[in-house]
Length: 473
Image 1 (cartoon, rainbow, N blue to C red):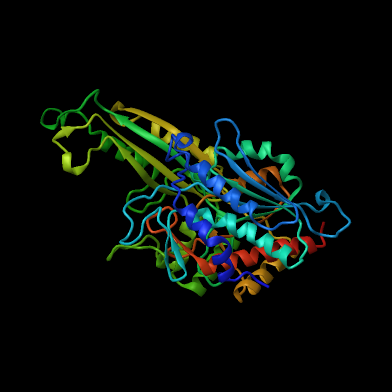
Image 2 (image 1 turned 120 degrees about the vertical axis):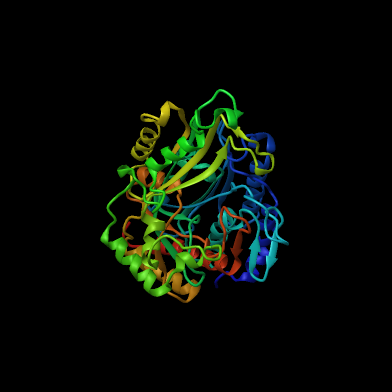
């Protein structure tokens, strides 16, 4: 018997709503997260939920390494009668995260980032879809198997708390928890997206990302613009020149060769098939202002641009006063944070080195240019699914949604997948999630489609059960 929405409402919804009220911002957005205590509060809440479930044998532990965010680790022992040991058969790791992005801005009337609001079968609040639901989906999927007497393998539910900061603490925990993780054979990541809410979507690739803070100084202190302008180059203009080294301001095309890759023909074919079936699905999900002309000439081009092309975003600015208090001053400096998405197979470290070189080589007018707070997250491309897993994914989507699964690349990043792929070269991956149209992850009015949440949970149950029955071990 599959989990129903009423089951989810009875067993999990109240705790998910409580989680929504906790402002557990990722460390990148709350430097005092230890003192704030919200991340720890969220971890304790989810751990208590896990301890309240009905497993034959489970260990629920919050691990805390010095100077690192905590990790919730739930080890659920196998219920299979197979004569082989758990280590012989392998472990299924189910991954999610509990840290959140900041509110971003004012939410729509009647909505608030830390007040859960349900409208029909949609739940609004920061973190509900990215990625608060994942703990509940992973645990309930396994509990449902035990209730039905369906054998399942050894499972580890791993919930980290620094993903929204690029997972800086994750590798240390993967080292520390290696004995608990055991012989990882299947990784189910619940932090990805969906193009629609009518099927299970499997992510085939994720873009990488590089970030840097770029500061341009031209004066030791600000001066009256009537005295300095025309003599001292504007720090903003110097910055514009530097950004032109990265991106063509007219087309948006990235100018640094190291940030591009050759796109496989299979990816191009899949993007065309998606465009043929769904139309301009990338554009349809975006809240464009009226009259905006988007980039790309077709739905196909926009799908490729979102998943396999490098792009630049300026995500933060310092040194510029608010308009209400702006005076006629030639400002001493301008500082921006740049974020560049990379193709899945681009080398993020090489790309970061090329970016820094482009920004610092022979600065215009000899201005002082400093590049700091750099970071690089490697992209990921899914290995080909083993025959048993390809069959299981198809059956899982048909069982949970009544439709065949969809396969698509995503424009975001999940550093965990690249880390696991390096550590466990033979591991099989299923990256999926609930971040469909208008889910607004990282934006205002974040939303979880509860029917999609239940569908993904049931699909995960099927995948975990299929792992026990596979015949390739």
